[in-house]
Length: 183
Image 1 (cartoon, rainbow, N blue to C red):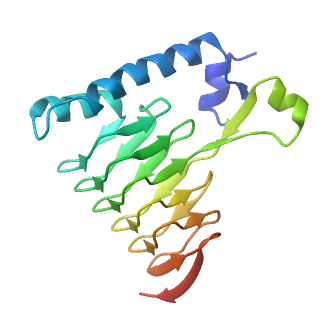
Image 2: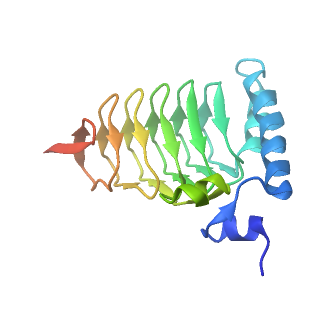
């Protein structure tokens, strides 16, 4: 049988309190602390960000604080801007395209939990990846739920909760987010 980390990386149910997984969380917390406390506009901040996330495209910029689960499952495309207070829970991969604008306090949440109460009590969980296409704008406070993909050029209004995929070239608002017009 595979270990819990292998199950997590494969997108299967896994037990979150596994020591190897907990060790990865601790490493990410330390790296996030280094990034979040780094001086403004310095090479030290870029170095700390590169140590925290899996891939940072050229010209990408993230304003602290940034909260992650593991960090190494996050890809930020070139010229992407992430405003302060972002939460990227990367149990599954989070892929953010090029030229994306992410407003303050946006949450990208990949973890899922079983409906069955005993499985939750036993610390089982899973995750589904999130994909944000090129040139997307996520307004302040947007929440993107597990397994969601957002097509290129789409705008998601502030405070929206994205529970299902959004196509390219639309404006979506509300809870749950609904398309209100084409771009």
